[in-house]
Image 1 (spheres, rainbow, N blue to C red):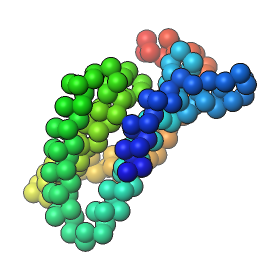
Image 2 (tube, rainbow, N blue to C red):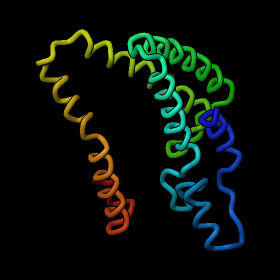
Image 3 (cartoon, rainbow, N blue to C red):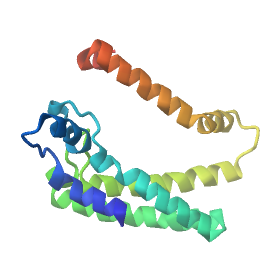
Length: 170
């Protein structure tokens, strides 16, 4: 519910500002846009980790990962279908822009992630343990947090040192 609240309330908060320069810097990080210098403001992106925490908790409580992920797969299809209707009804609001997803797009991607997770689990369950592709994916999966931190350090320092246009041109 918290993830849905973040997804649906975020567009209402976007681009707010005040007369206080310090407060505007904080607001830029929370609800800003690209013109203000915010690449990925906290709102709406906070919806994804909130949804992940709730779904992970639910999956752990089921005790049966196969049954839990199969249920999440069906939930994913329902979310994608519902999101498609939402996005078709008001694309400007439900899709928004490339750095700030609207509520419909967040719900769609959340459903897509659930179907993707089920597919990955099914693939790894039925594939050979010595499959080179799965070994590579397993290697990445074990190191994803470290790779993500390094990636954002490089991007962050690159933006500060060289600017957005140079980073985009690379």
